[in-house]
Length: 175
Image 1 (cartoon, rainbow, N blue to C red):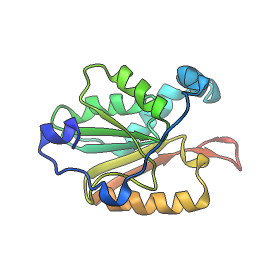
Image 2: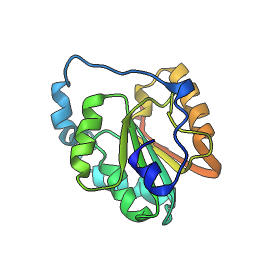
Image 3: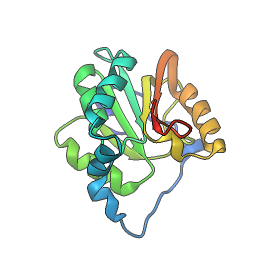
């Protein structure tokens, strides 16, 4: 059980069926420069993309929010301000160094960051009101995309909201 779940009285994540270990021999050098690279790729529109993404989620105070492929946590930390202290903010990323960087960025935030993938989300059914993913989906295989959508549907509450913002390879721009 993570700190957010303890604070908010949520049940422990169901990790039995989704326990995976991710290891790396060393953090990739690009992790230190991830935010800069993303801002360059988006032609300086990262903040605008984050604001548009959050406007699509219609976050409300008290919502439980999941950011899949959270990177350095920038978007989730903005979302956390919108859901307030009664909400729950969780970020997942497959890169342990990204999770470490997100945790450092979070400081005294109550957001929780974990190493996990979209196709093995370590939370119980019906946990989240909102899930979002930005600029990550294009990295997945077709099998991971399909399994990820099933996992997201599983962890979203009935009536939950999902927003995926990504690059459209056919148009070579941001959707």
